[in-house]
Image (tube, rainbow, N blue to C red; front, side, top):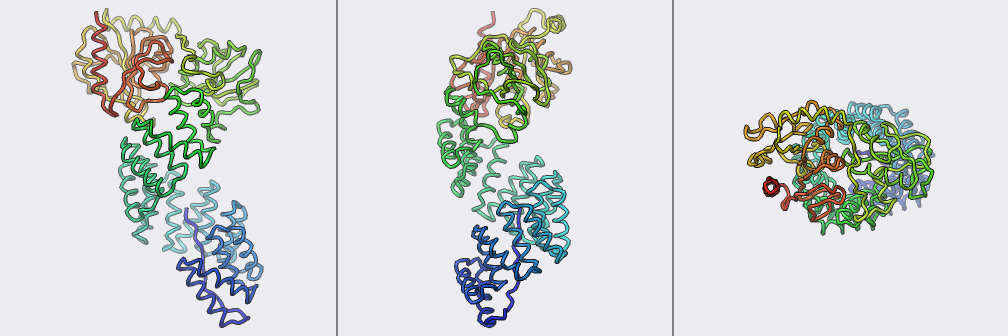
Length: 601
């Protein structure tokens, strides 16, 4: 958001008018040219001659604001306003200083005072909009920006700010029109291209966004945030090498924690685990409380099997708004205190697969003497309530009278879980026998005596690494070489549509329309011999049911599958097939086909 300093013309004063007038004119010329070190002594000299010179006080205050000495700026501007209480530019600039001091209410008061004196003051309208937007009052901010633009159509900052507010309100096309108008006024505005790239990213048009970020960088090669956003946009399309390059530029320009973590993440996404750690640790040296660095470092350590430090880092993963969304008011979070005779609520965090994986810890806490309830996502409730150790399962806002609560995925750190002590007794998820029986006859009718294998080839497209985590059904076509196997699609979501174009030689049976919830999927799985899946909730469901599951993993696989293992300490009946080269599924599928062939009689 762009705020606008207002500079007026120096006016002669009564004391030594000719000399001070010339002195201020020289000071203002240097100031407007950005030569603050030259302007400062001239303002100081003017104030030595006349300590109550309102104009000198005003613009010396502005200079202090630009040097980030906001407290001194406020004192100077307050003195100027005591002398000239009707100076609208000074009121507007005093608002900027208040905003910089973290005093939004005072900033609003100053802008409104300026607008009472001069309702057509476009700069004050724009600045008021920025303060309102910073407080989350987007609609009010839009009104002020629109008025600013109406009053002064050439005010580029107001067009940019209006576009930013409209983007936050998800009015992307209107926002893009604002940025185009800004570019009409200033064709070399890197900010306009950058903001347009942000709007296009939010709109889901990554390709167009990338072009805008590239143009912003062409206009301003030192635009660190444009490099970051270009890296994020290219990374979202799976081009992690390009993302790495852009993040390296950003780190060279601004080695702040955000940019360092982005660079580390791009290396991890390429499977370069030995290189990423240094950037997370460097970020934490700068800001020991930086959440994203703790989370990424935790994932890396857990993937290495360092569960002691990994879980400790993972416990620091919370952003305040995410924690607040699941915290139970009035109930202390469990940190490992004795549980004998206590009641505990475990609150599900992360996705379906994560919650299915960690529900096993209810039994661990029950063995420690606790009565355990779980609050999980609605589709999991029927399964969760049958998990050993769970007293009651429900969904919704976590609340109730408990001795403790804990995020489900924080339990391992509290009980000291290491790779060798993972509670891996399966099954720990159970399905109603009537549902299993209802599927048995239908599966038998289409499969006969053949081996029955379920397939999941794609996860949710909203997942960050889905481009590499998921595959296409056609990648599994070599499975058609195998005889005496009946294939069953367990695929849900957009990728299910790929069944329509499946080859005649490889047409899995599709009951997806009847897999209305996890209990139906689980009941079908219980009638299969095994499941082959990419890293999705179904893979975890199969493992938790105690059924054989083969998991196809990308080269940048998730932390829970560890490194260089073909088995999983989390699921005794799992077998892992890993990519050697990111994005190349061909050898993985070939290896799996050979493994299936060896298991055939």
